[in-house]
Length: 441
Image (cartoon, rainbow, N blue to C red; front, top):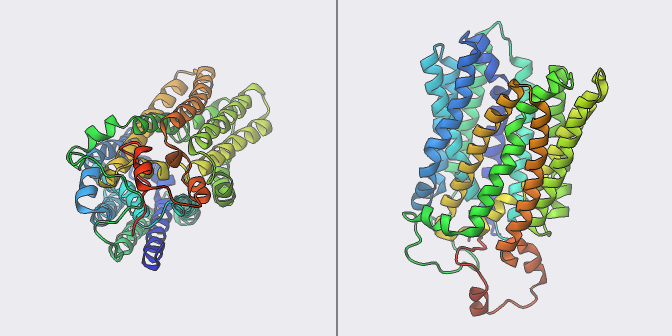
């Protein structure tokens, strides 16, 4: 990696960490703010959360094309500015229409930022450094959210709306810092990718969706991603929280401790886990995550099998959240680099946006399904379903491995074991048309 690339990556990571820090000031308190502080009710608060998902689903199908045609830098800056406007709007809005409009702008801005930053990280990394770069992004995001939530909790006062305006102002400022950090990055507009395979001339931004849907490995990864996000992230604040409170009799305060345990495991274990998985086959790591999450759901389910024991129930729920965090730390250096290595250079933004779209779909469907099952009291069915979903992650991970080339599934082992580079002709014949091992020049 060149010095310029390293400096650019540090700026991007710093801006990302600060924006996550700002999010920590607002995300944990958003429902309370809308429902109680602005006195708009729980229904409106639920609509605000739904608006985030809808806004993301509206903009993401078009974001990839813009990234591939205009580059990720301007897209990330525009997304950061939009998110800042939306966040400040939420802090100042006092009526339902204004709150929903601000939530839409904020949701759209945050959705645009994700694939733009992922593309920038690929531009600023190499095959050897990419897993570590994405692991660092995930580590800093969780650290920022945790620290921001801690400081936000110290500043918040439900009897004083001005304290929430202050929180949203900090969040907006951090988004602007992210935009400024990205805007100062200087990279080539058309990076050169190492070992990139020439693609058909028709495979460009205009035909991006068609090319992506013809890529069997990417389609399988998207299906796998939906199940992963549905089975984990989509349940934290809906079905799992309801199960913990209603069945395991965990207090709301201890539920906060469980979430803190999840973040703590990610922050403390991320780089230890990175050393263990970065030279392993990516498909096998994903399959192992499915088994870890299966254990997490089994432990969570066991919390409801000990009637009257709040201590054991709380310990089980905290342990389950910690296991989820362990699985997340295994995925961060695995999935995002795999998306990058599957994408043709001309469609990197499209692939990143498509995977972000899958994530948003899962995060919209997951809480809805979990909430409905919890509302109907189907907790046994709920836990069993999520155990099956986690086992499905393992099965889909193994199947994905059959669709990946050796370089896509384990690029670092290929790099470490290649004493003599393979001839270009042999390399081209052994790869799928959609494959790329990308690194920005």
